[in-house]
Length: 510
Image 1 (cartoon, one colour):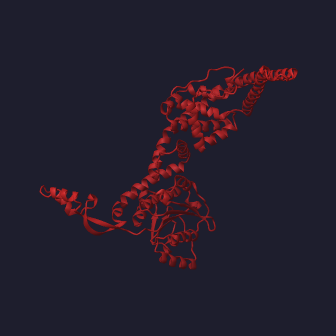
Image 2 (cartoon, rainbow, N blue to C red):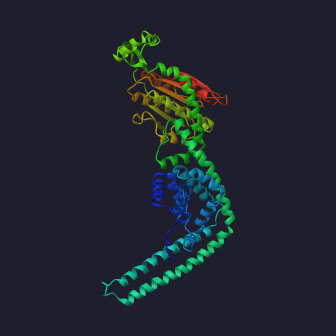
Image 3 (cartoon, rainbow, N blue to C red):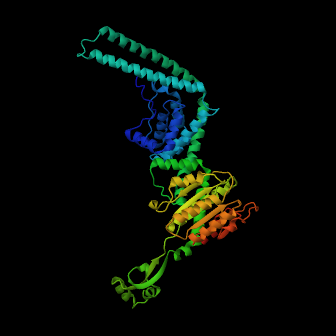
């Protein structure tokens, strides 16, 4: 019984193994899968590598059955049953030589296997324990076999003349005895395990078939979700393979993230439609007309000469000489930050949470176009810690993808307090070197504010010259804008959570 160190079932080359190692090093999801699976089955990493190779390789070659390799009976059964499945063959048409789809299929199938093994319908504890017994026996066999080889080398070494020949023979004999004893034990363990798993063959086959169907459906969704997410969030989809796999896994698992992505797409379309004319007029003003050759800024009367056959040559001459009449712009001074105060109280759960966070991400896109600092303050009960998310100048005034995902998933719950988030918003605006900031205050509730606090806040608001646009989500009809009226410049009520409901907010932020 030799070559017991090899636990692979699929033949892999150095490229396959290197790609898999890179994936394991960059994908938290894959690393987590292997760690969790390794607590259940010995050599689970080898099984995951076999699955990846089964999807990725152009020519999949299975290491032939023999006594040695059959010691990992469960792993071999999983691979062989998968390969005989029509669902696997169909899925392979999508995954062959595609690292992303192969890794996605491996991750999904691995997750389904772990879920099944841990369920009441899965493999019994005794069966799993026997896998570990076989693995430990294999390790012991390998250790003693190495000892035998060592003693044989010592026996052949001519330089070791003073060695005790009797002791050498005894040690070698003992190691040989251990190897033979463990080989017998292994044969018994493997036979017992094969008999048990043979009875579970149909059960395992059913699970593998079901898992492959799930993997096939989700792999198809994964790339579409990645593209949709990148388009909605304005984030490039080109990234390290491991990072792409992790994002796809999050999107597949999180209905909240998928809904957010779809809603942001609708809101961005609404915002772009409603603000096209406004954007074309803001940010600069004409302050001079002089000579130049910038075709994007020539005055209308110059364009008329192009339509006249005698004046067209004169136009071309003056273009070459840089003497066309064109306007010059004076850039508008920088705008203060755009801050969104987002209600994270318990009553905001569900569609209200998704819609309000989609508004946040869409306003991030709006602020980025205006090159403005953007911040989100998530608030709830009085005294509860505020959570902040912000864009960065070094990232082109964008917010990192991890921060967007964290914002999407963060939901504190609890009650509602207006004063703490507004105090923090005014503090951040006061720290900015630019005035004329804006606060978008989103809530579905009503909260009293103190008179002394309100007086001080309004004085600071006037001093810093910022505006507050409040959005009251009044789905039940019982919500009141009474408190919001005391500090807001504009209040928008939302009775339906649609993209058109945010239109007034986008238009107002000029």
